[in-house]
Structure formats: structure tokens, C-alpha cells
Length: 109
Image 1 (cartoon, one colour):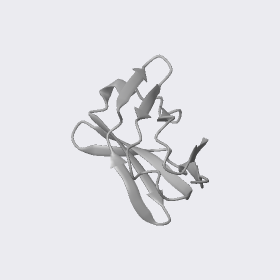
Image 2 (cartoon, helix red, strand yellow):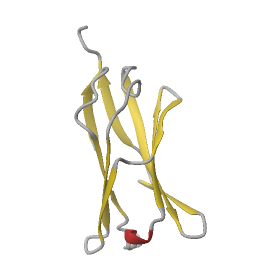
Image 3 (tube, rainbow, N blue to C red):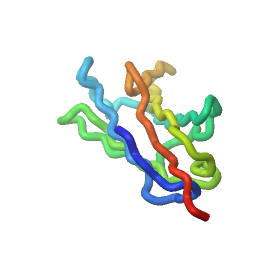
Image 4 (tube, one colour):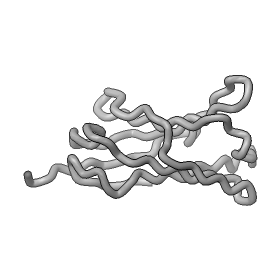
């Protein structure tokens, strides 16, 4: 997924689909969710999603996060990953093999 947004914009919301196709895990068992975003080597987003909708029949969850200032203040490619916390304090990161990208493009003013 690559999402594009203009610098300083707070809409549209960040929407991430989490899918565990490797293990076909029922994501309804996740205790908490966390979205992490790194831009130019700096962690600029570390927050819980605004909402989570889990679809156990399709082994996926859709996380939505409303942007807040200054998360979109700097231009560049923000690398995004999601951390699910399972019972017993066991974390699992999505996607497992890479990161998602949010491209923040410069605005004109």
C-alpha cells in the first residue's frame, strides 16, 4: 500500500488492512493495536488506531487512524507498520516482511 497526502493535511484518514495469511490467525484475539510511522529515521507516529474492525471470516483487521498535527508536517516517505499485542504480552508486527508507505508531498503554501 502506498498512500499519498499533502504536507500538513489531516484528511484522508490513514487506513491500513492487516492480514495474517501465513498463519490464518483469528485477529479477534488481539489485546491492543499500535501504529508506528518513521520518517527520515525519526519515529513521528506511535499511537493506537482511532478504530479497528476485525473480520474473523477473512482473517483480517482494518485499522483507521485520524491524523493529528504535526504527523504530516515533514515531506517524504513515512514507513508504516502495525503492532498487534496478543494475550501474555506477545507482539506481532504487520506486515512481517516489509513496511507500508505514506508519501507526504509538499504543498504550495
